[in-house]
Image (cartoon, rainbow, N blue to C red; front, side):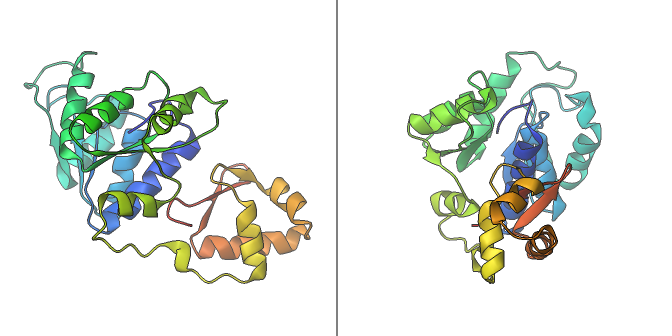
Length: 244
């Protein structure tokens, strides 16, 4: 769960987390909204994983309309649920009502990039009432889109800084092969440490490394091949969601 106005990094994170969790048989439940919800569903579907979309309208209505392709794919390859009759429009009060179903279906609620007014905070509160695990990924204190998630952590939600935290919290019986077991040489360890959880520009990595640009680029390429970092548009790099 998270912001409808999510950043590229937030959506990339949600997609990677969902893809990794679904790859070990965990079902991803979300609301088929734009932003974090859509990214999570797409991630789950990448490896033909299981995912459930819970609507705030009738089953015959795609909202938002931009999700038409995802909505159709969910109907074919996953599951879509709603308590509303066909033809019922996506009224504002339907979404808080919808969120109680999401919280009820889930074993844990993970909040990514949520502002203080985000509907995902309603899902988190309901999750607590239902005895579910509530988790959140922290972000910059200067970014409004992280204030809700940061407050959840301040109020006692589990801070998640790696995919392993979700597994141990909600699915202790599942073994997840993480990138923690990838072997790295000295230069790879050094450059990997310079890549942040939020995007880091190549120029910053080169400057901090005190190494030649050509050498840094070669190391980054090897790290990409080992799938523990990912290159983003504009010369930025980010650690993948399932790396240590």
